[in-house]
Amino acid sequence: MNWGKELRAFRQRTGLKQEAAAHLLGVSQAYVSRLENSTASPSSQLEAKLERLLQEPEHRPLFEHFRTTISHSPHLISMLAEVDGKIIVDTVSEALRDHGTPFHRLAPGEVLESSNSDVIEILDAFLDLGAFSGRIASMQVTWTYNNEGDPVSHWRTTEIPVRDDAGRWYLHGAHVEITAEEKQQLLRDWDGPIKVRTFADEDEGAAPSPANDTEAA
Image (cartoon, rainbow, N blue to C red):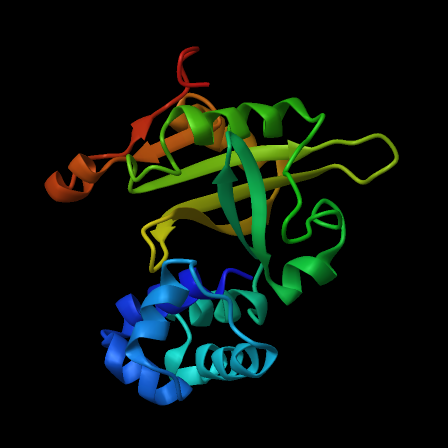
């Protein structure tokens, strides 16, 4: 772990001055400065102090509490991140883990990949439409899981972009199983598998925009 980076982020998050951080850790302000600039490395004893300080509930980033609400949710919830052009599973709820197919392979830290054409189209749309850069307010998608040997199922997912304490964007997804008939109705209503709401829509109360032309998908 980069303790200097973690300590600086902690101070920025809490508004703590270097002098106050030094007092909590039992070191000098100059040492805190060197630590944050990566010109000093903490001893094992100081590492233990840093870990205790950063893990105290009142000092944890707000977004970590948000992750916890997802992890323990009784609903089918996931949160995705984008790293180097790939979509990564960040957090999944207990209910999603326990549900089984089609979510049985989702694990935090794993790259989200699929051979399913519905899912591939939607993952591409997440990147193309700027879901991980704050360009949309929300997105609804409908898709079918149809892998050989597994039961076929149809889904409606609502994706909401959220930001962490450092300004990174994530997609919070709520999943609802639907019937084949309901999926077909959504495809007609949305003119495709994706419905996007922009911030302009939010401001003006306009209807969400379909995002199902060839360039968007």
